[in-house]
Length: 94
Image (cartoon, rainbow, N blue to C red; front, side, top):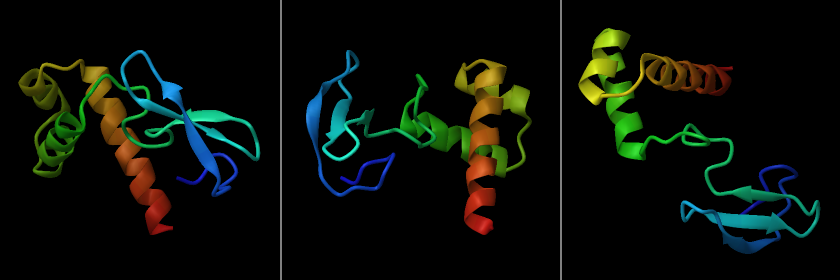
């Protein structure tokens, strides 16, 4: 895995978080990071399936409040996920 900070190819496993996510350490910049760093799942207590379900519902035209009720997630969580996905899509588009 390449370093998420400096793109150096030499990283090694560096333990696990309390949630069980694998940590990595770069041998070049000596920074540590988890495998979900800089993704839609970073710092979220939402599984990948739930994120996919939220984005699919939003794509089909459901309201954000309706999505939050159906998925039993806070409205701000749903808005944050949709906003982050839109930002990443804009980066890919540009």
